[in-house]
Amino acid sequence: MPASRLWIKNPLALFTANDQDAAGGLVIENDRIVELLGVGQSPASPVDHSFDAREHVVLPGLINTHHHFYQTLTRAWAPVVNEPLFPWLTTLYPVWARLTPEQLALATRVALAELLLSGCTTAADHHYLFPGGMEQAIDVQVEEVQALGMRALLTRGSMSLGEADGGLPPQQTVQSGEAILEDSRRLIERYHQRGEGARIQIALAPCSPFSVTPDIMRASAQLAEQLDVRLHTHLAETLDEEAFCLQRFGMRTVDYLESVGWLGPRTWLAHGIHFDEAEIARLGAAGTGICHCPSSNMRLASGICPTVDLELAGAPIGLGVDGSASNDGSNLILEARQALYLQRLRYGAREITPQRALGWATRGSAHLLGRSDLGELAVGKQADLALFKLDELRFSGSHDPLSALLLCGADKADRVMIGGRWRVVDGQIEGLDLQGLIADHSQAARTLLGV
Image (cartoon, rainbow, N blue to C red; front, top):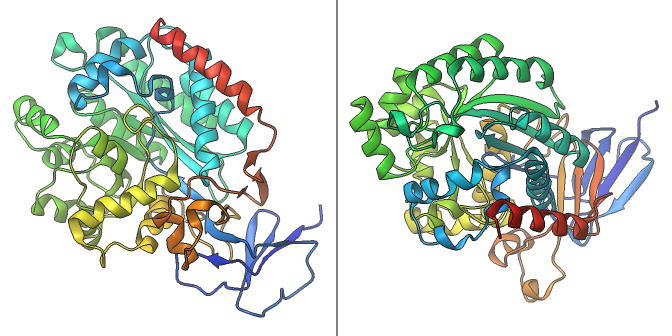
């Protein structure tokens, strides 16, 4: 087929995530960016279509690097509203253990739709629940991602250390190491796409130090190296977790990470709050990435990730909304705003700018997922874009459009493009019955909780 060329022209503002000049817009050919234009410049050769972006702030598609899609079914559940992480988990585990494939499909669709409407084009999910009947959970998620036309890195999570052996999860939610590794290999061989433009990828993600054995951590690291996929886990989220590691393994979290073969650039960690200076230096030297989850960390009172210290040490930083029961939303542009404000408490207003927070949500997050083709606007990159209007009351009187996105609280994209194709137009997801989805999902949530 002949190439289709689109000029997104004269944006109100444009953030490239790489300091390149593109004030005149950009040209897309099929699924890639082929030109960045300065003020007054026109495309080097004719285009088939143009889109006037004079009312839009244009960003690279936002990238979410940590989520639990299934948790959209247990948002704002009264028994855990005021609980910190460990009691929050132990109260919710028995509920989540009743999850069905149909409920997971709805939960995933809701999480993806909410992310997409917030300008997110790529999402990583950490699914670690495989009770009886849920053995095909990742397959269910693959179908939902494909139906919405998004990109996803679906991590095959695992829990192998149940209550009977000193872990937190109930026994009906844990699996044997053999079952975990066999399914991990199956999913990688069946679904994992490589190279530029990949839509579905798989990573390995033992859940946390308090829910998996060191053996499955080591075996997952070996399999990830053998099959060349990434590794993900929760680490250093709370002081309770640190105490658990010291008591059970006789070492702090980063020592534990190194002992099981995870300290390296293949790994990215969710939360990464409770590190000392020496541990930050080791993580940076190893190139291990950290996903900052500010809303979840505030919701559960877990602490504040030392983002700037980690970046200065060499550890890439990205953003994640975390599960929609520890944040209660799946909105990535609002997560960038939360990161801006929470990190200013630690590092000051001058150090944490809107551009830095947006950089974490785009180029930084792409680095965490091992994607050099996403996260910035540059020639050769995938045409993944999020366009926001500033025509609501909340933006009236604002002056700098890029800063206004975060400072005035943008929460919904007007248009979203993935691989050169519009997936959100005029604030609506193409082909999705949103009201029908809300009704079905709400009923599934009530059924899961038995109300």
